[in-house]
Length: 207
Image (tube, rainbow, N blue to C red):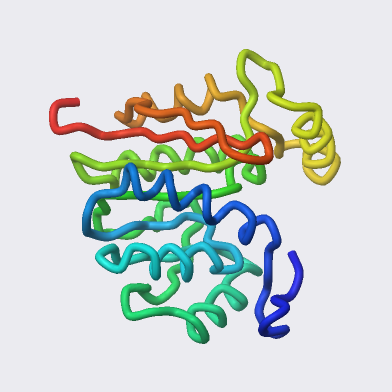
């Protein structure tokens, strides 16, 4: 993470700038026409600001925890629009999830930074607060049948584990199993630039 070139007081992620356009195309295809979106792990807030502007009929709820909160709140205060709600603190490992229900949940580049317990908590929480019908969209790198999709993802996995052995590029099959346990079914697995994926799950009226 680095400071924004436009406002040096705000945190800035080059990755967010690179991937926001391709992610926007997926959101445009899968988000409902209107309603509330919970973003889990909003980080620098760049995605929240950009997507709220791109989807003015959606109300964007940014969230994060710990050291990310001050910078996230500063960006929303400086650049946020009327359809961005005040930032909430959300630790996916705990019980203090929002009481509100959401028709859509989005999270980018979070699962590989989470512990196993946190990833399990993420899907349990989403299963409870996601409306029926509802959609969950997750962006990031994944392994398939234990294999990385690119050598760069294997190197990234090594780096993640060197910082914390609980971190790492997640197995798609394991993550999809957590989603299924939460009452979600996979509706799309979309290849993205830089060897990432967008996974789209739905919670149906009849599931």
